[in-house]
Every structure is written in structure tokens, then in C-alpha cells.
Image (cartoon, rainbow, N blue to C red; front, side, top):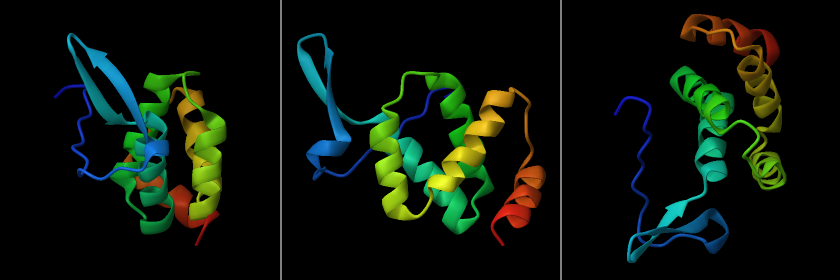
Length: 112
């Protein structure tokens, strides 16, 4: 809805990708934003999903400096997609909107 991203994970989650968020008298276990962002970056870098690339850019703009970059980079390095993070981060930092067509062109220029 609008700027809200919601993803419902399965019931078995690794502890390192989950954080607990208090909500009234309840505690919610949610995926760390870095994990969700990493999935988007991997989707862009490895599967050429331009929609995931655009979502990753939007997420980086929304999160600003509130990211555990160490966790994110380790995860992306393991997935062979750390260079995709650097690429998308440059775009996010520029503040210029990008189209799927331009992202496609840049992907083919950088990664082939």
C-alpha cells in the first residue's frame, strides 16, 4: 500500500535475519530490512529483475543511513551480488529517478 512494503515470511526463520519489534503487548518477529533489501539486490543482479532493482533503490532511499551495511555486504558477497549493491546505491544517492529500461541498459553495460 503506497510506500509500505509487506512480505510474509514462512514460519522457520534463521535467527540472524530476524529482529523482534514490540507492538503493544505483542512482539512481532520480522525480517531484518537488510535481508529483504539483499533479496531485492540479488534478484536484480542475478535474475535481471528490474522491478527488484527499482524496489531496492526505493528501499535504500527510505532507509538512509539506518542500515547494517556489514551484515548486508557479507550476505551479498556470499550471493555474488555485492557489486549490484554498489551500483544501485550510486543510483539511490543520485536522487534521480530511473526507469526499468535505463536499469536494463545499465545492467547489460556493466554485467553482461
